[in-house]
Image 1: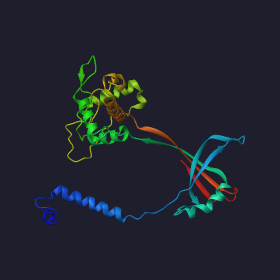
Image 2: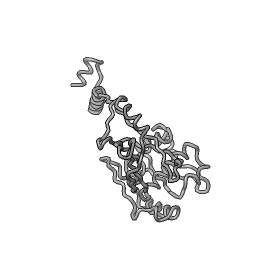
Image 3: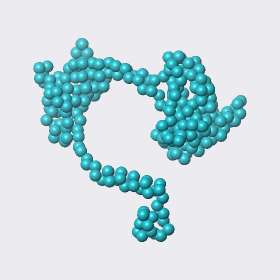
Image 4: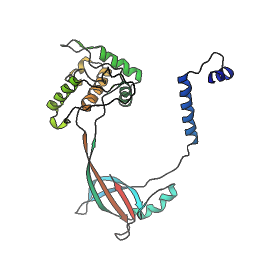
Length: 271
């Protein structure tokens, strides 16, 4: 029925395939969502604070704290006029730390690259188009003359949606990480990344260096600038994917504010 509509409204001979029709429908639905979206203005209020030392002098490093509650009620400022009445009071207020909470947060490493994630990261970090990324990756895959070893393919096949990594590559990488950084940077067992895409080409591996011992800086003189930057991106992502989770120290400071210690209805937080 869509094909008939195209013939009637646009031009004879046009066809609406099962892919194009659904794609157009998705675009139309999304555009309608955008058109029906109602903007809502909101304001936040931050205090630029500095720790006062025991001798009465100010500390060297200022920090921002955000207003979270007033009189135990969550704040919601819909316009500038809602914020203005509080400014004069806060400028004259005393600020006192009421609670300090220290913690620890872990973040798992990202999976090794697939074609799509490589293109996304190369665009974000290197400014490469998808076409340029694939052209450079093709060069790295087909082989680069790196001196004594001759012409070597530096990465695995770059057209893949699989996250699979060969056991041999994992063993080699774990040995490298242990020798280079120490055993504390290794997880107890090699991580396994599962491919979410249905019908993924599990025959291929994820995009990885063919040998992690070929560090980017060690072979840089044999590569063009583009080749080095992309190889470095792939190498770092893969080695990191086989390492232990990153560990972050966290700090949350709650601060009350008011014209006096007895009248401190404002609650700020800095994280």
